[in-house]
Length: 222
Image 1 (cartoon, one colour):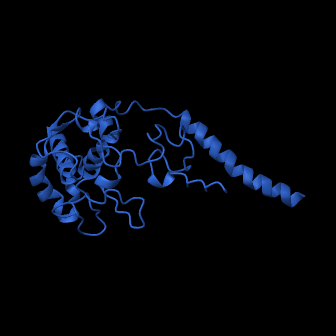
Image 2: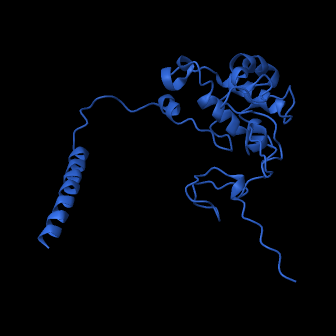
Image 3: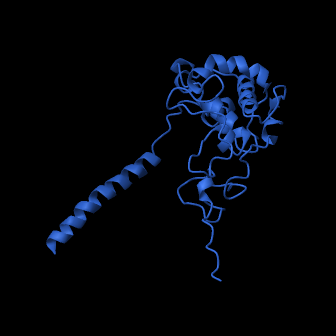
């Protein structure tokens, strides 16, 4: 019994110490150093663009304008026509209608349900090299909003989704009907992580997955 009591006390002492430290930190002074972040600084840390495109910035671009940018900054990894290049960089076009086959081809054209997802990914993650052009490393933008709109337009054009002269901006991009727009379950996707959708796989977040579709029910016996 004494051994059990000592074991419990040995467990409780670190817990009590952690709680005491937390309370002390909560009461520590602020030292009146620094200032609240302004809107521009907050945007650098929170630039996710949703499916409705509300967060898209001003700017515009066409596929014709995006072609030379793609050739200079993207083709070395993704291929001259977006067909894929250096592993593990994926292909960007093709594979439409293959997601439910034994050999699915995942690309922007075949997988993404919203064109705004394409813009968001390019804006926050591309190009990944050289690092000094990556905003996460230096705070400098390798691509302007106009560049991102133009690149998005060019990729959509290569996927036969829009015309070469179609102008992509904060109003037109969210209206693009992607080929796999209704190929996800649930349709439309849930608006909050694992909250308002039935039969969602818990822990998968808010992203829609084509493999969430319930298996077909067996035919009734005759």
